[in-house]
Image 1 (spheres, rainbow, N blue to C red):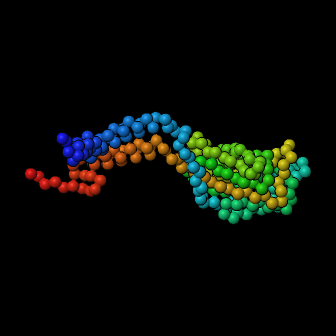
Image 2 (cartoon, helix red, strand yellow):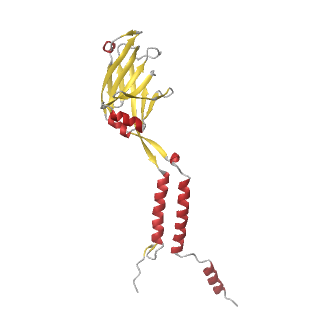
Image 3 (cartoon, rainbow, N blue to C red):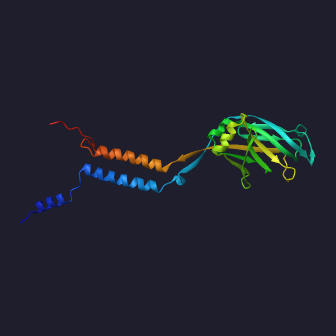
Length: 237
């Protein structure tokens, strides 16, 4: 007759857990197979890109006026009583003679900032015919959101290259109200400038890096010198 103790021992042998090396080897196989499969379904389109506010060094603004007119008659910009004030990233244009049209070119920052810029957002107190970012004669147009009163300028690598190649050291905002449009400059115009860079989170690279670290841990735990309880030092016989 077989004793209960013997039966119990046989059951333990039948259901004995694999040793540490076997477990780690199985985990390594799973990781090697699963990680590439997961990365294969991830492409650059699902990598998260976040806008990161930058803090450019704004310069004391200068203003040029071009092709100015008032009530349909040509007028010199100096006769419009235009003045300009900057407080941090807010540009305020004042005039004692509102209702004029033309182009106001305001120099606001060093163009070197564009190397780190992904987009520039300018919030205007009123809508204008056109708002451009300009450096040395190279202009970039923005898209206007009437609900927010914002002009957004997305700077591609090509646009950055052209800006950096211009002779000018400064970046300017060109505000334009054409004679044919119904827009005119008010007595007080404000422009709030926000500059953004971008940060990309590459999920595929993170997965590959994490998998490599886990494989290294599995390799160490599969040796007789390492275990989840610590490092084991065995003496030579």
